[in-house]
Length: 249
Image (cartoon, helix red, strand yellow):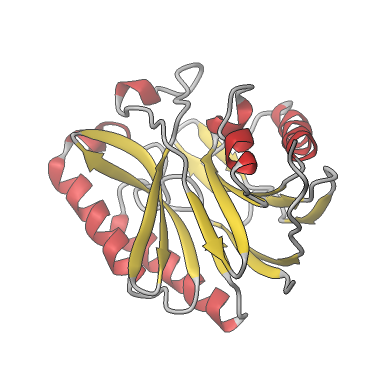
């Protein structure tokens, strides 16, 4: 089966500047289309920047972020874009949208909301509880947002059991001196334990006391890193990956 060409857009968004972030997203989508990519994925809350904090209490900010998602969808002819945004459905959700050919095909809501250290997501968001699977070129793709994959009870296994061969994990994961090694080992373990490929895209740049380190990567079902972006710099990481449906017991 034909390999899947995936682009990971390791970006530095500006918190609150939805117009600038949207322009950056569209620019990367067009670049990925020029490279004939099948999928492009962006970091967590890419449209709003991370963390948007009390901007989330402003209804016009939420509306502008939703309008931006619709505008971005119009640029997805011939490519799937996975974009982090804030959704509103009676409550606010830390969400990702799957966009293709001008449409929003689906939404996934973050299931594990971190509320320790520098994180305060339970103050703003409700957690999701549904999975999202995408069929693309004969392959099945699942999704997760940042903290979701760190937890022992995570959405990877049920998605794999439903046929997912690739999990796209979008992140705004801050840097610390000990975190990178632990993160890499965790991602390798998730891939090996579930016999699935992982595409991990992380933010770069700084916001207040947070610094995001990038190091986006693709890991195969053996737990091997097959492509990796540099640390702390914006980069469009493109890789062809071969996906195979493993036998699930």
